[in-house]
Length: 535
Ligand code: G16
Image (tube, rainbow, N blue to C red; front, side, top):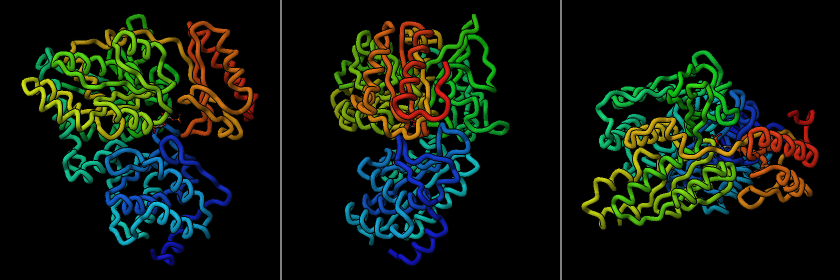
């Protein structure tokens, strides 16, 4: 390691005094102006991780659903998964080391993680459309370069595209070509293979209106248009030419506010969907003829895919182990429907797609979605091999699901999920209304509360119960008892400086009232900031 060069470059990316940041749900996230040193240091970390694994590592500069002024960084491991949890601690140590301790911290990480510094290092870099992203990705490049690593800057890409190219590179092309062209070709080919069995194929086009959150999704969908089969005609809204990223639009806005995004004109029963700021989440929705808005979130996407896969497995007499992975935010009605009606095992894990992905890999087929629309389907290699061997005569059907194309095997991907959903709706001849009618969501409400230090809230039981501060869980339990068919939980966000509150009850009024009362409990018992939450 050239410590002189490190010192010189690090001085160009100084750490603001007293600033401490935590590695959150999906990496670091904060106001963009606080992140230059973090990006430089994540460039350093990616070079070390690359040497430790002997593989290419990805660094994505994005703050996804957060406001345009924020930014963040997501690290991508060799097979396109999120950074291994054992390295999250190193990331935090490096991001928070004072200038004079940087060299020592790097040396310690190299020792603890047995990094062979003689090895080559290779890092792929991508960024979203935020005004701050270009400069911050240059800081990543500086970090990789000062440790003698090689880098490939993919420039503007969606987060799942970066995951894709990293996986392709490290599997020597087995997963696909490590180019955007390879990504577009792989997805559209998989979609075509799926949809050609559709009763409706060849009978006109499927129109879909897509709110791209004024983000990278618009750019990449436009780029993909020539590759998209004629069966699906996408209409892009909120392409970022007029309005700010994620402002009153995007998957997170639509899910949280349960209303349509600004800038998308909806006609009754028209299928519409929203991506988030880095295009790794998707939610669908429509308005009925009476003008009521209907949200079809990640839970219903998981249900649609599970029904399809279950029917297919039954048709070919397969007994592969399939499960659905959810988080505490999953609507209780979806869990009940999956377990009782579909008879599919459901598992609940902590928020963060990394936790869902990990759990999903325990099954032959793991359908994992967060209610916010982040998810995909993972299929085990063993399952692909054994299925192909044992069920020769059924191979055509099995090829449709193993691995389930075009679902990303690495991380949630709005574009690939959209193609899967469109294909299944077409294959099953389902309208958006029929899909929505699988089950009715229990009325629910998501709220946020600001507190002085959100880490005072610690949780257990996949975040369904608060362990600290003292008295908070008891208070929530008492409030929940006041309402029928209710539940509620609180947890500190890992992407925003807020505490999240979720409540369900028998009516929307009661869900709103419960969520509000719980938010007051958080405000009073966990050190609320500013004025108390208003109903
Ligand atoms: C990220 C994670 C998701 C998580 C979301 C919200 O999404 O990838 O798994 O659900 O943050 O996390 P939290 O509630 O901790 O703020 P994204 O799309 O913002 O990268």
